[in-house]
Every structure is written in structure tokens, then in C-alpha cells.
Length: 150
Image (cartoon, rainbow, N blue to C red):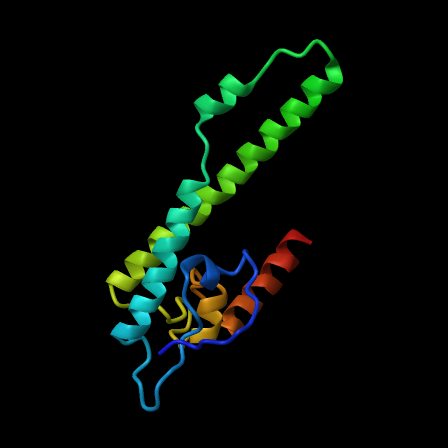
């Protein structure tokens, strides 16, 4: 079911965060069967736990703040807070996407393009488990966005 290669995994790899290897599809195996959906569910739940574990309280950030007399020190502190808040915002958006994807697994419509209904593919989903578009529809979406935003 899982590949066991002696490849070095980066700490950014979603599969390594979840502690799983790439899924190996068996011959004549039905797409998004119970084994495959449980594989992705484990990846998503572990990823979500990791994101929640990395969060810091706003209370902690406010306690950490100090009123520095030096304007450069104050500016550095404000920039650090700004970066932390942006990071937290991205993590919250990602957690929402993970929750929506877990609902798709529960509703048995995970792994299919939400636009055209085509299979997204195991490799693409392992690279981006929250993907909801096939590669063709994603490419078209990016072209549309690029044209609209200039």
C-alpha cells in the first residue's frame, strides 16, 4: 500500500509531516476506495494537528510586547508581530481548507474536480491534499485570474 523509499524527506513535505509514504495503487483498485480515503484522511488530520500545535496565543504575543524607547526596536517588534499575524491568518485559511476537504472525504466526493468531475489523481492529491480542481481546470483558473488582475 505505501512506498518505502530511502529518499530524504524535507520537513515541508506533507507526507513526512503525516509520517506516511506515497500511496501505491494496486492493480484494478477502485479510485478513492476506503484505503485511499483513509490515507488522505490521516495526512489531513495530522497536518491540521501540526498547524494547531504551532499556534501561539495572542495573549502570549501581547505579554511579549515591550515599549522600547528606541524607534528601531519598536519597528522591529511591530514587524515581527505583523509577520506572525499574517502567518497565523494563512494557517487559519489552510485549516478551513483542510476542514472542507475532510468533509468532502466524509461525503465521499473527495478526489474529483469540483468543476468538471474528473479524477484529480493520487499524486496531485499527495502534493496538495486540499486540491479541489484537476490540473487542467486549475491551469484555466490561474489564466483567468491572471487576465483579470493584469
